[in-house]
Image (cartoon, rainbow, N blue to C red; front, side, top):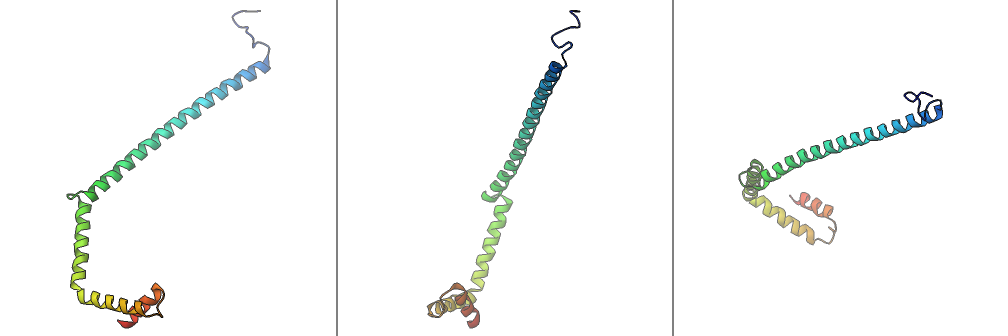
Length: 120
């Protein structure tokens, strides 16, 4: 028996296979753990970027100097102006809705809307 080349695995192929399998499973486990860690970090990075973009948009739409906020104010002003300009039409529509709503034959929203369209 040569001490330099012989150990408990010499001439025992079943132990060699078990040791090789154990080493392979250990390396596979470590590799899977590393892949999991990299995927998790990538997901966290992606979520951080998305959160930052959402935050910027929210700030833009809720602060008076933001572009989104200014556009919303402009659209609201246009809608109010349209209601003021079409005041006669709005008044007639409201009167027709009240009249149609008081009719006992109009029980549902669809029936009231049909009545309004018929009376215009």
